[in-house]
Image 1 (spheres, rainbow, N blue to C red):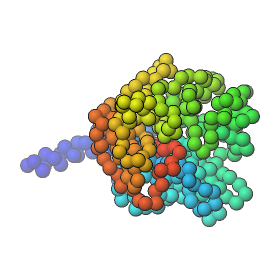
Image 2 (image 1 turned 90 degrees about the vertical axis):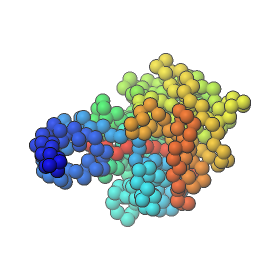
Image 3 (image 1 turned 90 degrees about the horizontal axis):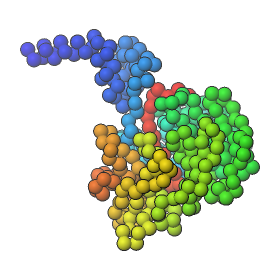
Image 4 (image 1 turned 180 degrees about the horizontal axis):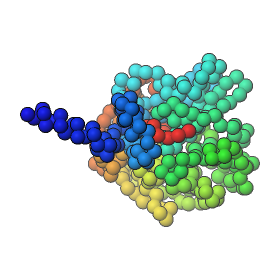
Length: 364
């Protein structure tokens, strides 16, 4: 009798498009992508633009992607380490298989990740005598070949993308003599009016100081201040004070989580060692949000900050120690998870760590 009732309930759900859509909206990206193969009806429901406008990617990343300072051109290695967070079996896979679909042929030496934003990656493929630039969606493995920027005196290349506001993305190329901006809407670069002041340019290093896109602007942390560039108005705002941190340490994390901008660095309060986490307010001032007890291992570095599904108010900090990533709950200072790493993963030399957010609906 109970089995018969369950069958009737399942049939009622199956007959209702609204109920099926509500269930499918709860699925993460990869299962959702596979469920398109269940039937033509499900494929039609998932492919409907209305469905894609309702579906939201999970806030907790499926992987961390770290740019490596120890990378050297021409060694047939890519410039990043790939750390899966949801599929433990993937730790045994090649960390460089993530972007093999960009290489296309045997003439590509390596793939360099330049920037990441909103689920997209901006990459450079090195080939004999040429560089090719792509923006790709690693979830769907779709990509677009871009016209090349002028990198002769480039200090930073930043991808700016907010899928909740526009399907189009921009890329800012910060140069010594002039800046240029790419728009996916026109598929072209154009030179901007004024270069950045030299005192700001001297603090930017292309392999380390990648800007962070937040609230329509790209932000950079400098030695004792921070600045941001409004991508719509194309205006630079500078000389904003930094919070009280121990600036003798270059090990800090700067990034956007759930539409908030955070900065994590070593505490400058000698009586309270460890890490301080600050949040940027609407008035562009920093407020202390959390203090994190010191990690005992000497060789430790901050990788990232993230939230977990179902705990939107709880933030976690990922800290690298030799052959491990520890996840610390910032609210109660507890270590919630330890992820073992393969010996070949060299996160000690990571200059920037990106979140891999899976989104099958991002068009390229």
